[in-house]
Structure formats: C-alpha cells, structure tokens
Image (cartoon, rainbow, N blue to C red):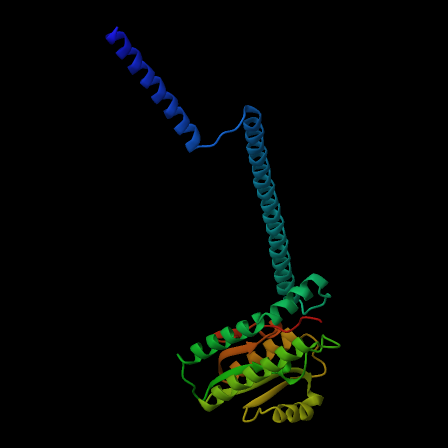
Length: 275
C-alpha cells in the first residue's frame, strides 16, 4: 500500500506539473477563441492581398510612364533628325522652303539651352587651332563672309530676343576672330553677296562695328545672280593673281562650295531659324 500510495503521489505530482506547464505556455503568449483566430487570419490575408494589388498597380503605372517617356524621347529624336536633314538640304539650296513649326520650336529651344553658343565656341576653337599650325605670308589670304555679321537675319521679319542675342554673339565672336587673325599678319579678304552699288554703305557698316584693315572687299556685280558661281569666280581670280587661299570662313553653303576653296573651310553655325 505504501508503494501504491507513493506511485499515486508521484503520478499526481506529474499531472500537476503538466497542468502548470500548460498554463505557463498559455499565459506567456495570448489567448483567443477559434472565432477570433479565424477573423485575425482572414484580416492578414486581406491585407496581404491589398499589398500585392498595390505593388502590381504601381509596377503597371511605372511601366506605363516609362513607355510614354520612351515614346516622347523617340518622337523628339525623330523630329530632331528630321530637322537636321531638312536644315542641311535647306543650306545646300539656299533656304527656298519655309521651316516647319516643329523645327522652329526645336531650334529656339536649342538656342535658349545654350546649344548655339556651344556650337559657335567649338567652331571658333577649331579655327584658332588651325591657324596656330600655319604662318602668314604675302601671298596667303583668308576669305571671310561678312553678310551674317552686318545685320540681323534678313529671313526673319521680326526676330525674337533669342535670335537677336545669337546674332549679336556671332558678330562679337567673329570680330574677335578677325582681330586676332589681322594682328598675326594675315591678309583678310571680305566677301559679300550685296551688289557693287552698295559698297560705300557696306564699308560704313563694317567700320561702325569695328572692322578695319582688310585687304579687299569683294562684292557682286549687278549681272551676277547665282551666288555660288560668283564666289567660285572670285576665288579663281584670286588664285590666278598668284594668291594662295588658306581658308574660307562662312555660315552659308554657297560660299563653301565650288572651285579653289583653299586648304581648309570652316562653316560657322547658322542663324536661319525663324521665330
């Protein structure tokens, strides 16, 4: 009986320990009914679904924005390429066709963002670098087209402020280049498409903006109508007189094509954009 009592006593203590352990585990966490647990799990599932839906929606929106952005960039690049080709052919043919509005808009934006000033600076640097490698002599001449620097662009009836700004910038930078070349001893011949009867007025305009000391001023006769042929004839006559044409500097293609162009031609950025 003592053994039986001892066994029951131990069993009773074991059950008591088990019950105490179960309470500890329960009290160390939290207690909820099965109904509350179901609601809690359903809430977690709902929140998870909403989060996944939000992430998917955000990804779709970002992809749509990216596609639209790529589309806008693609259209802009296509328009820029179109305008570049149109500009090149316009220069080759003397700007006989009106510039489309999309090209005018791109050109004005290019100017306002400083693109034209950068193009002009880079061209001037190339000119200076070239003349740093060559020395002047009595029979070496440089031809400079002056029509762009005498007045605002005649193709623009009412030039805007940005057009006036780049016209002034071109006049100033061209005068600086002219002054440097003349100070180094280069013989400078000025070219103009204006008729001979406007010589006196042209000389006055040149003097008023700081040009002086040129070797000669070549102007078109009244009977000459094709400017490219006129420039070719003038260069041919200079060569026949024993002159070596070192360079031709202009922003217009008619002065940069034809015969006897010299060692190097430089095309200045154009200001043909209409406002």
